[in-house]
Image (tube, rainbow, N blue to C red; front, top):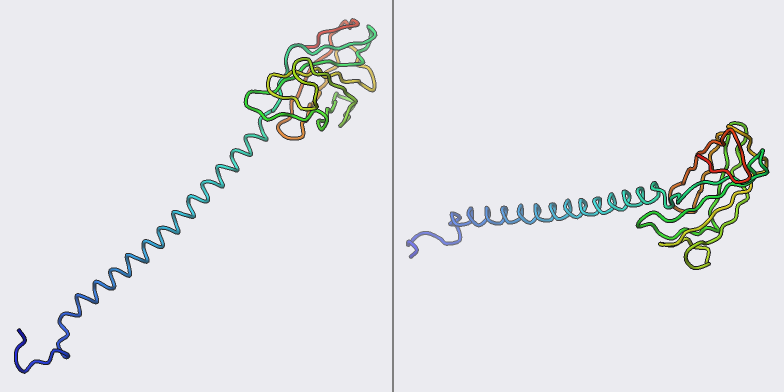
Length: 180
C-alpha cells in the first residue's frame, strides 16, 4: 500500500534497478554483435588462408614425375634426341601436353623452348595426360651433345610445378645411351 501523503509520480526509488537492467542489456547486445563480427571476420580470414595455402601447394608441387630411364639417341659421337616418359603424380589434375613447354640448359646454351613431340603409351590419345596414363617425350636438340656434357631439361606444364631432369652424358656415346 502507498502511504498517504506520498506522491507516486515523485517516488524514483524503483527506477534505479530498471535503469541498471537496461544498461546491462545494452552492453550484452553490443558485446554479442561485436563478438559475432569478430568471429565472422576470423572465419572469413581462415577460409582465405586455407585457399591460399591450397593454391600454393598445388602450384608448387610438380604435377608430373619421371617414369623409367632417360635415353639419349644419336650417331655414336653425339646425342641428338633425348627420350623420357612421364606420368601424373598422385592426386594431380590432368596436364595439357599441347600447352606445355620444355627448356634446355647446359654450360653454353639456354633454349627456353626446344622442339619436342609426345606419344601416349598408356591411355587415350587426347592432349591431356590424365591419371594412369604415361606419355613418352622425345626432345630434339639443335646441336648434339658430346661426352661429359651436363644438361638440364625442364618440363613446364601450363599449371603446376616444373619437372627438372638433370643428366650428364657419359664418356662413351652409343647410338642408344642411358643417361644418368
